Length: 184
Image (cartoon, helix red, strand yellow):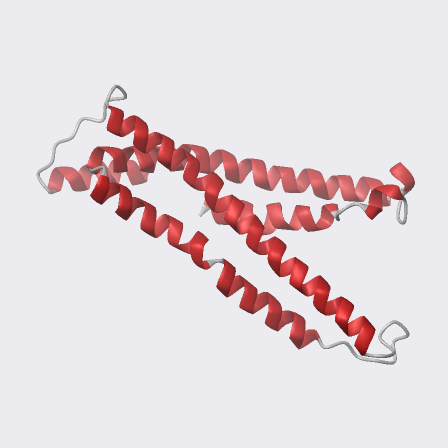
């Protein structure tokens, strides 16, 4: 809320005394836009992590096919290729999520005005907090589910539950990447 208070103070310094009233349609529109931005940002982040992970899986499969002896420990995998894939994919896929917090306030401010921009600030703060918390705690729950399965429940390691997409991957995506990014 300090960001919103600072925004109001800057408006006052610029000579614009604006009352933020919830009956104003510009503020309501701003709240809705601001409320959806953290969800859109998080979705873009998860999509980027998914694409990077998929590319790495394909590269690892390629290496197992083409580099003899990896499974026996006599051949050496090309780790640099995976690092290169992750780096290039992250740089490419994070352009849109990186532009969201920069472009959205500028677009809203110039098209809908300062009242709507105030709504965007409050809406994004309120929903951003809950998106970040739900992602990080949800990631923790997935991590605990993985440990629970590995401890022998639902077939344990190698069982039917481990043939599904990895809870560890989802856990890391939510806990370590998307949740903290939304919270910034």
